[in-house]
Image 1 (tube, helix red, strand yellow):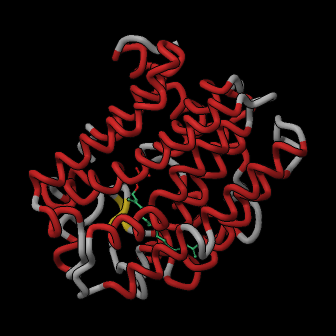
Image 2 (cartoon, protein in one colour; image 1 turned 90 degrees about the vertical axis):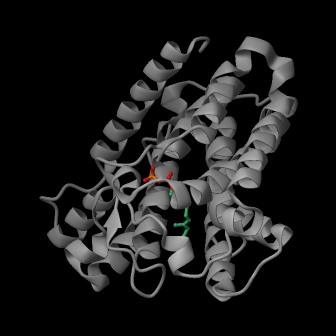
Image 3 (cartoon, rainbow, N blue to C red; image 1 turned 90 degrees about the horizontal axis):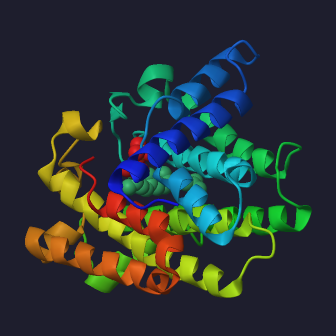
Amino acid sequence: MSATPLQFAEWTLAMQSRVEYVLTKHMPAETEAPHTLHRAMRYAVLGGGKRVRALLAYAAGEFCGASADDVDMPAAAVELIHAFSLVHDDMPCMDDDDLRRGKPSTHKQFGDATALLAGDALQSLAFELISGAHSATQPSQQVSILHCLAVATGSRGMAGGQSIDLESTGIKLTQSQLAQMHALKTGALIQAAAMMGAYSADNLDSDKMTAVDTFSKSIGLAFQVIDDILDTEADTATLGKTAGKDAEQDKSTYVTLLGLDTAKTLAKSLYKQAIAPLEVYGREADRLISLANFITQRQF
Ligand code: GRG
């Protein structure tokens, strides 16, 4: 169990390598036809990203009693969905960004049509991995995991949040409207990542499940508040994506709404809200709490 920052750093590196290995192994090879599509899919997914959603799945799984083997497919699947959303988000018809994870966005590298298809195929692959022969969990757990990921990805989750975001450009949202939009656009997938980890455990304890649910809701929102702060404070080289994009596109953010200092205070209070239901579990919850720290103190 994680206790010191060094142990957490080691665990983080181990889990990031682990999910990278699972993704590398289970994604179609570039040598498999259609070559361009498979190259674009691998380009969008491999060798980049903090893998926060996979880390949440592994940490929540461990907290609830699942092994890392049990969580491998859900962890890989949530990263595939996340990568798919980034591919589509970067396209000219959405946020229109040329840079992602420090390299040209997928549509800049492969063209719009291939990027669109790569995103679609990554989404399908996520569900294929969870429901396929390599899944380590029982069919009833797989159904819970599939349902959780499907809802978080669709119009009642990420796609819905993105739609609200598109409609809100140039409009000043209230704090509660902003929170509602981000709960869907960013929060739903972060929450699903943690819940899929929980559902990977046999005989899931319902109090632990509730604790993970409450934790992940608050940490999902905290993630977005920090994202808004970094968009203002960090530079493009550090972020690996274009900084200052929100202001350029006249978007409501926590920084434009509250100012930098209040946005930082809000992130701290969401962190406290997130870890509150875990504190009763003592050392058992160390990893999730360290991860909440990692998310709220990240620099990119
Ligand atoms: C059609 C279902 C469907 C989805 C497409 C484009 C879109 C709809 C949704 C966009 C969702 C989106 C891109 C939200 C932003 C989330 C966010 C803050 C991304 C950055 O996440 P990090 O920092 O990135 O975890 P890394 O690169 O570290 O993985």
